[in-house]
Length: 123
Image (cartoon, rainbow, N blue to C red; front, side, top):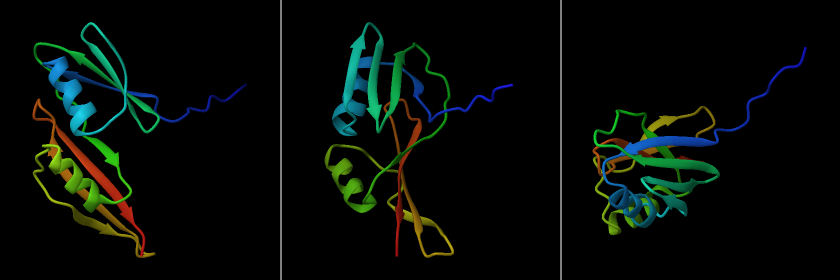
């Protein structure tokens, strides 16, 4: 009997109302590399995981997307300069026993769904 081993997450799907507005938000404002688009679909690279956007009249509720960044403060300032409006500034949410701190900053996409940038800060 063989055991199947699952690999890393390959793709995340998110529904949007306006594909062109979302292409600009995810590509220009967030700076994700655009892979390709056709019809009402657009695909972006999220550090090796493909983000699949599809247009629907009524987008469904979905999970929060947490995007890892190396330096949360500089990422926060850069994204703000591109028009991203944060609901929370970078803040520490946990300190591990080794002193590493977990930091988050929350914002919403054009449909009002939550996203966040996150960073692990080593001592």
